[in-house]
Length: 187
Image (cartoon, rainbow, N blue to C red; front, side, top):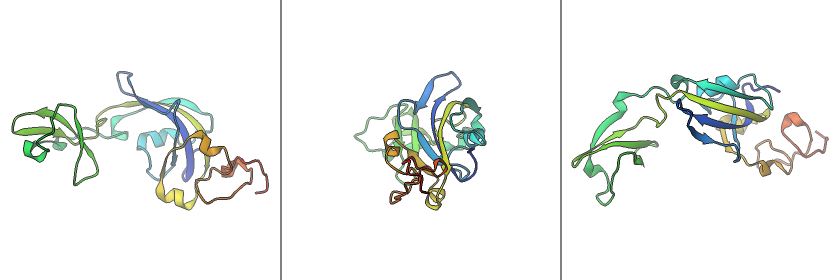
């Protein structure tokens, strides 16, 4: 089976910036699982995974425009110091969640009366290198297609029965293509 639209893909990755520094990695941790073709992961990574098979290991460079996008100057702006709690000591590099939006801002300058914040994604403008190891590919169910990103799935979550993603599934078919690893063979 190959990675294609509406397939659930479980894989390990590590991300490096242009200097080679590892920014994040699932190797030695729970792998990531997502539904391909529903915009659940960044466009450049999804393009690189298209057509790959289980046990494929490869490296891919995802340009900034296909990762977190370019840095947008309009997302760097000044706010009054009074917008932050008075008892909080603010430092350059601090990250805060905004109260009205569901995103983080980074403090890039601290003055007495105002703070300069950057609302760009911390990796905006960065070309990113990914090391990928595909562990499993299977068909997605309707719920998974709707939800897209399934999350980080520990290997022990796959030890008993089906790994189709449906918590109520009693499948014990043994068919590798459905995701079940029970060994029953009665699918």
